[in-house]
Image 1 (tube, rainbow, N blue to C red):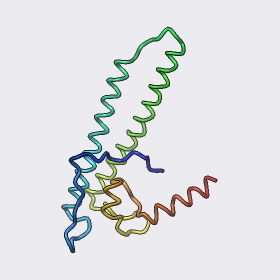
Image 2: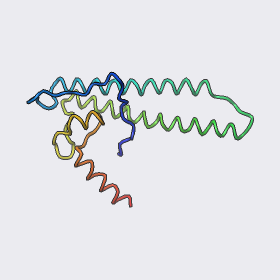
Image 3: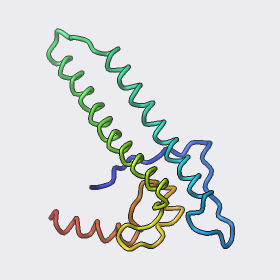
Image 4: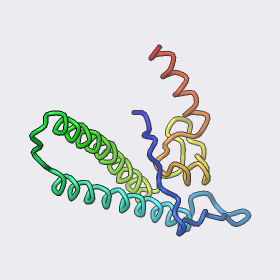
Length: 145
C-alpha cells in the first residue's frame, strides 16, 4: 500500500529527539517520544474530521442553479476523498501505536535493521528503512509501467 503524502505537521511544540551518546535504539524514552508524536498527529486528524462534518452540515445548500450545485458537490467530494485518505492514515497510526505497545517499532519489516530516528520523525508510520523503501518503489515503477 503506497504511503500517503500526508505527514504530521511540524508545529512550534515539536522538539526533535536528541539521543545521548551510546543510547540504546528504541529505548523507553524514544518510544514515548514517538507515541506522543503519533498521538498528536492523530488528534490533529480527528479535529480535521470534526471540522469537515461541521462544514458539510453548514454549507449543505440546495442550489437552484445546476452549475452551483455541481460546484458544491465537487467541493464536497474532494473534501470527503481527503477525509477518506486521513481515515486510512488514522488506521495506520493506530497500527503503529500497537507496534510501539508490542515493542516492535522502529525496525524495517523487510530486512530488520533500524529505520532511524530522523526518518521516523519525518514519517512516524514508516515500516521500511530507506533502502528497502527505495527498492520497493523501483519494483512498483517497473510493475506499473
